[in-house]
Image 1 (spheres, rainbow over the protein chains, first blue to last red):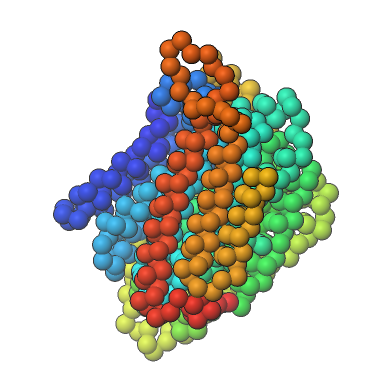
Image 2: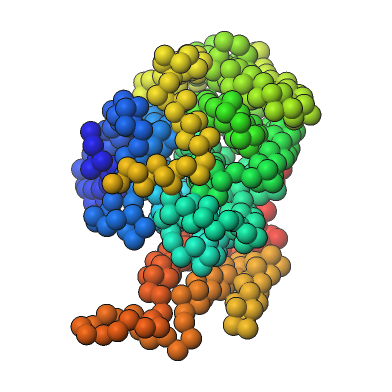
Length: 499
Length: 111
């Protein structure tokens, strides 16, 4: 494993998207097999690079052999690896799930093409070390997600997709404007170079304007609260594997990761931006939680809960302390697993019963034990019941808030955690326990591939807490935290590795 | 002066997206925003009386415009084209389903 392998993270999904669109229509079963192969190889590639990064800390690939400030470079450090594993693990499990689930739709190969393109965009955003390249990959991921939201071409899907697209393209415009202003100030597009120049010259007032533009743009992609309106429409309207992908990964790769990378490593975290991120996080937490309480559509409820949980991630990362960032990243990983699990559960329920309305369900656990119990695990994990993974990350976030003397934020986080438990218990009671409705007598458990991916995700939820033990999670979680804590030293590290 | 006009164009686009009720006008608004930013990006690399950045033999480098923003804007335009094509396709499908272009009448999702 050396630096020549870095472009594969983008090249594998891009190339397989091309092949699937070319051959998928003619050869039956090709798109299933090939997409699963592609996501599996991506996942194993990211696992393989963990020990290498643990030893070398950073790998830089220079595209076309150009030296860094001139050419584009791709950077593989511990934070990148952390995100890559999260993204590719979930993507692999979701492609397994889609084998059976997407039978309900026509043109499965189109789904896989768009799915792989979205994956290419996300992996690209994560590995790139260049501002404009980040924008290009961000647009690849966003455009394919716009069309995946509209995949069913019914009334609601089209409406949601239109709304998402208008807000998404406005967000991209803000990001591009931010990049243009940043370029005019530093005359460089390389992240490490920008960071170096900003340190040399001092930041100045232009940085505030650029930060505001980026918070608007990436905040819209991450569905932070004043910019969240598109998410509860777009995520439930998509097919279930895509809802899982959007809620579990897209808002994190495009929103949280990009914001964290730019604010910590390029700009250097200041007290103002830290408090802005924390306040936005608290606002998302509270509003998302309160709105989720009143939902009857199971996927819509999960979507509001995503907004609320992203608030936790931002609270943790925004704190900027060592423990806070660790907790935020850990919660990001946990949220990716349990929220995809929950969305896959809702997809299974819809697959078996044909409805998403909580009031029409009841007693499903007796008929669909795998879906019922894996959803129980997911719900308990997200609402923070010990010993599940979600408990540890929430505990760490609250502890780090207390450590940083943000007592009000800590108490709000505890309250919202109780609220989360309330609305997830409501889902469990209405959908999976209680009396089996007469109309639901004939339902059956979902096919094997869907069960496999749900069971593996619930196992990760059960044992995710083990990552906190240094012996297991050292190369994974702690090193990723180190990258963000180091802040502006990022430039020296990147340039140092290129010599 | 010309920067201010860029800002003005940007504001027109945002106004168009926020206020107009017709889907097609909203799409035009997105286009205007995109072009305002592209224009701004080109202006960033422009020098007064600069010449084209072509490096021929035995030529002194003086007062060239910055070629990098031009390349970037070209990419941004292509991305903008993809977004516009997709959004127009969605708009056509929306018209088929709802029989109207009025966003206030396309309201099945709420909460």
